[in-house]
Length: 276
Image (cartoon, rainbow, N blue to C red; front, side, top):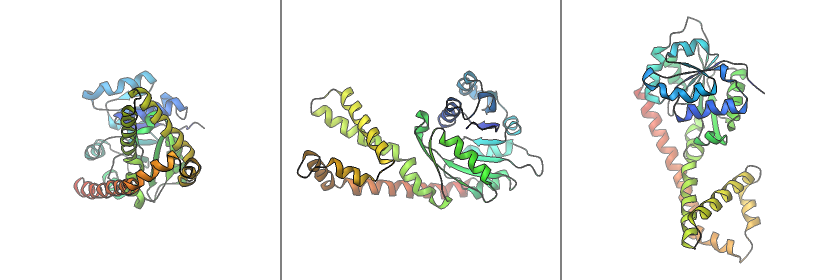
């Protein structure tokens, strides 16, 4: 179901640009419902948005006045500048959706004002192919309608879950950093396929398609059950699993998720202290 909201997007980098393209392609928004803003020196970033039919501007204030929902698609260090570039009338209330990593809801309220409803959103890079994994949390002032807007926008480019802000760090270790883990696994499987005599292209395609199929099935069933179905006693898969477990694959992956989550927590503390 399409949204009727007017959406302002501040920033047009890879993530913001991918989201706008995905929203238009999915039909959740029409191009004329979207106004995108970047500084004049970055006008080239707006060209793909203009080709889609979105409304361009170099003035954040114009995007803010246009929008029912304002997407903050800039890096954390740019947020304070964005906040000072936007002036609201007393009593104005608007849904602000922040994509900036590490900046908590309380800091966003301090930057932009207590009258605003806030959604803090963490998508991952797969929104570029409309297969993203996105989580979001909201301020206490945000309404059910606000949550529905966020859910519809980000469900149109993948899957979306609402969580408590206290879980943001853990999510980063899984879906935020997770694509990099998957790519590393694909690299390793592909390299061994080549060593076994396959062409790099065939080995890579087989590895990627296998991961795609396995992950699709795991959306609906527990991976342990699916693994058991593939693993015949004494068979080649069982031998492969035995060696992966012997090498500590499970432990290493768990440690990777934990390390990424811990690092994100540290970065969040620094950013929330620094930018206010």
